Image (spheres, rainbow, N blue to C red):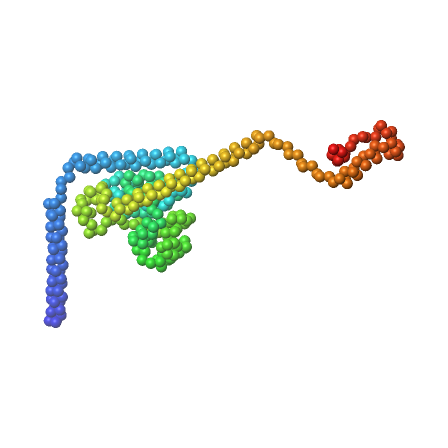
Length: 352
């Protein structure tokens, strides 16, 4: 009985000690949270009502702008018609959309970014514009994002540095660390390496939409060590694009690429116009020369007279005389006056 009582007292003492330790940990944690809350309250700035009103007015203006751009895009699509719209969609490339605004945006814009999977600031995604809905959505998000059309080298660099695969089952992303991951995820689309993925995006194959759905959004947020980004306020981070950030660098690169492609297209157009003008001038010259030849009178060219030998001329003269004689006329049963007296051209030349 004494041993049993000692065991019960020991267990009770251990339980009390353990409870006291847990209580001490809870008290320390609560004290830490209270100190942090007091520190925040002491450093937190007072937001006046005027600032809150300006934010609400800005959101209202942005929502109206978002709806107005959508209406203009719908009217433009109706005016284009099905044939011209199909040509425009076929000629449009793969767009890179980078989110440049944070939480201080209307609900409509937030919902549109959520449809594309860009829930955070500086998140980006490659979008293949294949239907009018996507075209209208990209135009509506232009004031709140940076949009460009990267070339093959930029896409390759982007996938190698920040490319990740998205898994719908686990709702997580995995960094593309090798070709084996690409082969397992995109092998059914004949994509087994990064080069195949870049070629599929640049050449716009049929299964490009399914491929882009399995690529996770890119994170363009600048690193924590960037001085200009660390010392900015939350409002500035949400509303103002940092010129030193990677997103601004990408925007500059996309703008340079668009200007470069625009210059190349303009140069090609000028070369095509010059070639067509040269061809038209050559055709006009040929047609004018043909008309001149047709208008000129055709000169008749006489065939050169054949040379007749002396013996042949004598034989021809003798034959004519025999035909003109009365004996030959009697044989033929005609009077001499009725016999033809015409001489052949060869005899005339021989007489001369």
